[in-house]
Length: 145
Image (tube, rainbow, N blue to C red; front, side, top):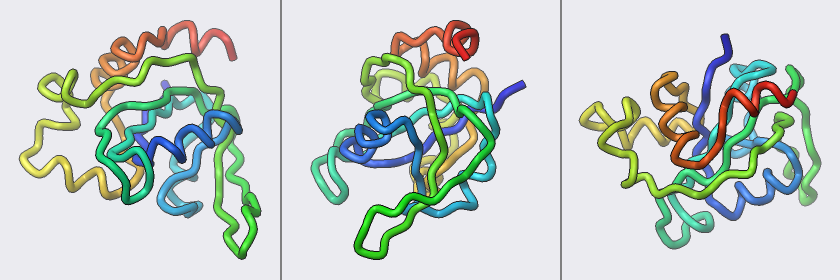
């Protein structure tokens, strides 16, 4: 059984990951990425459009972890973050407010603080709700490995 994960990253950084077929979380740290396994589902939540930019609060991408390798990537100027390979589905961006009342993620009183961890495990119920709202068929995504 695969696990589902929520990565918290600005939308502009999400788009870089989607274009490049990778996930990068927690300012490029390796340890959070090592929690994920091949076949896990990964969804991005973007609190902002850009880092320190305008608020967005939306689920912005969804895909499947492709292998068990955590790898480094030299972005230049001394920044060498760690990444995971992800095959992203075609997905619709969905505002958090559309799902907030139904998500286990949002049920604790201080749930917003949890998002600061940068990578959060999701319940099966939550990933099914998010995927459905994003118009992604999880069974099809898993079949097309």
